[in-house]
Image (cartoon, rainbow, N blue to C red):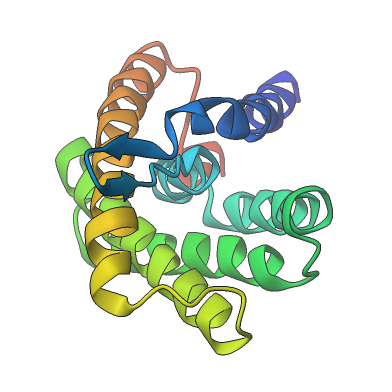
Length: 175
């Protein structure tokens, strides 16, 4: 029971830290402005779906997706859909690929890219952003991927430590 609480508490901490790390953004270098968007919550959900429980990652994703929608963007349903969907996708992909930290990190970065593209397309469709696609790739997606690559490496190191200490067990190990 305590481990379940710790998992939710860790994701809650990342949820609260995510906007704090947005201090990196925007960064102006010459005439170019780069946006670094940390995606700590979704990366942690992908690792949870892979190494702990897909079902729990989906439920936690739904909860924090609704919180993100309410507190940060005021569009109810966007993150509430994207977080659980990507957690489900990660858990499903990892059923067919032998999960290890390198593969999970790569899948995590690919799914963060999918998330960014979904969000860009949605915001572009409703007229919330007028940023052209090429500008989105250069000024937002690539810097965001750099930021999240560093975090994913850190997350992989933490998960290896927790798995080795037996703090995190796969749901199948407990059945």
